[in-house]
Image (cartoon, rainbow, N blue to C red; front, top):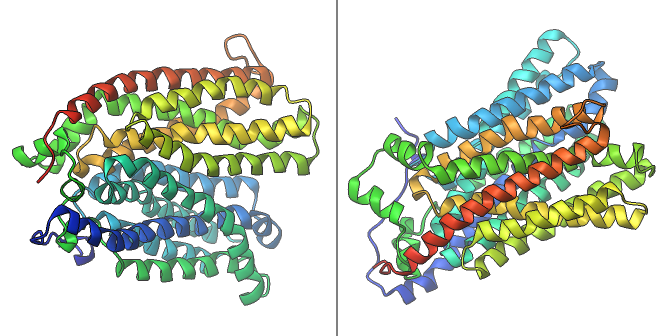
Length: 462
């Protein structure tokens, strides 16, 4: 029996003109948008707190780096696998409420971690299980946020809508340390357990509030579909699902498993994560060991990368809207910029050059980071979007992110990549990944162009 909170509400459309319904659209949209934004931000409070607590876990409980790495690996694996499993399961359910449900369950897991924390092997096993479970529960958050935003926004605002939502993880990551440390210092006398318990309680409260705000679609308020409200044509895929009454498995097979564009986006995402995680993971080490900058300067470069990402996330989404939804073409522009900017970063001979190149890379990397997800919206019916986004995420985390953290480090230690070793080989691998991603997105851009021109000839929804 399905939970009532996961059932979609679909009320008869009000006997009002589209113009009148547009006036009623903004308030429920804003509430729904706030739920997915704040819930996803809160997920980072109960994700990044582990990173913040690691030094204290070593000093207070004598935990080894291997133990900490094992706990973190558990999260990564379940998060990557859950991206496909949980997002397939969530298809056809209330996408907005998947966020607070995942946050609530994740919050209870992190609360449990704080309560069972200790130096024994049994406590270590419990922490590993709980953190892995938290990763699984969080894995549906991003995809169902995109589904909710898609259900609520017209095509010419989706890039901006998803782009602005995407900064929620930057905000959550930025707040994680302050929230964890405040909780530990003011409520637990500096005990590291407070770094888990306090953020978990906040997450649980936010989740409960989230259940009672907004909904997954304007149809829940009798406003009709977003296409009807904004007088847009319904996509070919959504029409096919409705006319042929396709089941969830039929949608998954046709529009995800055997969809060549989704697979192009999956592999593009793998290559992109090699670029993104390669810079994110190794920038401070490279700056300190090779460029000769102090640890403080190296860390400030990492901050500049995040600031650039924050700025780029919003602007690239808006730019792709102005280009009439040509996400692939806009991604290619950014990826070409990444290849050239990597050269400046690799040979930065001043603090300014180092910081400026990392800011630019953050700005550029988050164009395809955002737009690969938004591009998928144009080739999948709404009921299959979470699953498509989930498969894409699984590939990115299990292959791209893993290679960036292990493979690039392996090359940097002196193992050759096409005859190049050390950091020269590492940068060559990152550039090769950016070029491969660009080629794949160029092919996606061709499919998008065909889709955009076909859509322009379709009648608007009534």
